[in-house]
Amino acid sequence: MAKLTIHANSPKQTINRNIYGHFSEHLGRCIYEGIWVGHDSPIPNTEGMRNDVLDALKKLNIPVLRWPGGCFADEYHWKDGVGPAENRKRMINTHWGGVVENNHFGTHEFLRLCELIGAEPYISGNVGSGTVQEMSEWVEYMTFDGESPMANWRQENGREAPWKLTYFGVGNENWGCGGNMRPEYYADLYRQYSCYVRNYGDNRVFKIACGANSGDYHWTEVLMREAARNMDGLSLHYYTVPTGNWKDKGAATDFTEADWFKTLQQTFKMKELLVRHSEIMDKYDPDKRVALIVDEWGTWYNVEPGTNPGFLYQQNTMRDALIAGINLNLFHHHSDRVRMANIAQVVNVLQAVILTEGADMVLTPTYHVFDMYKVHMDAKFLTTDVESPAYTMNGAHLDQLSASASVNEDGHIHISLCNLHPSDALEVSCDVRGYTGQAVRGTILTSDTMQAHNTFEQPEAVKLAAFEAYRFENGELHVTLPARSVVTLRLA
Ligand code: AHR
Image (cartoon, rainbow, N blue to C red):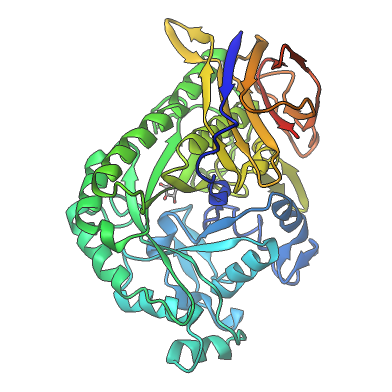
């Protein structure tokens, strides 16, 4: 039996909707095929972007979308991707599979995508191989209203009014693929580059500095010490790699219970990272002005057999659904500092919410978790104390229950629960302090096996269903969570 105490009588900070952000890189079949099929494609599209994917993304109410990378960002020269498509420069995507990048999807196409799905753009600029002038002119191109060389060029290329651009990243993984820099060197470059990321007219740019690689606390220390006053956000990247070994990460669908357990253990490292990076940030920024932006997270497995190793294409099972639920719960608990997160990546790459094959599309278990959890966006976080039985394996243990709760502006309380055990159900009793009603509605995602996933042949093997295994007793809500399940309850 697990026990939850939800302090519904004292709502806390807002859960920033941007925690439900996504990431789209020029990598494998994310942009090309996954989103962009071109105007002449037989796949039904809107201005070159496939309608099935647009509709699925709209349904998730994606708040923010990051682009063009990732490692690709620090090799990307934005001027190659504007103007008539037939004149755009062809380049080699050296990081990701060595394929030809024809630049048919560029600034105009990305910003149009954001308009079509109702997301705010988050653009990553090039520090590793780009110049200050190039970055500065990109912002001028997108946001300057009036006469200027870049604004005139934008207009010649078909866009009269400037776009609204809020989120701008000054480099990506500059400790690695973005230039192999030391934090001291990058901190100085950040100060220099970000200085020329201008606010034109009413546009206000929220500037995000490249943050640490998982547990590199020294990076956070140096960036906060040297550049906190110049930034609005500092990023953090952490991927869940089942084996912890980048050379053989483990398979997406072919795994044992021991692998399941190990993967969940690895994902819980996120908790320690949020706590320890936040502590350092608190030292330099006690008022929590600078946001922690987890702009890359999710599972990273060996690629599907027979696919291009540089394309990072992987399947997505009930294990991924739990990992999504656990991480979103963690972000809620730390939402005083974590104000954006971007799962990697939106279509066909890593822990994708959507997979495509030709004209076909499937929604992954991770998609369904985002769909279920979207009720927490912009709601107030409710402190939730969790007393959970242990899920043990080979002497190690995890809490069997992961949970979080929020209250929205209509006064509806939403509680999200993940039962991590692959074969045992879990009884949960919830003391929802301050709640006196009994009107509950529930949704569940579960599956017959740990490895269950959606395929193009069986696209609905794992799907959402109504959930009714709850009752009120002596003023407490009692819930029976099936094994390996994610549930969201609404208390009206
Ligand atoms: O998401 C895939 C890659 O992972 C990104 O390009 C990079 O930033 C990270 O290492």
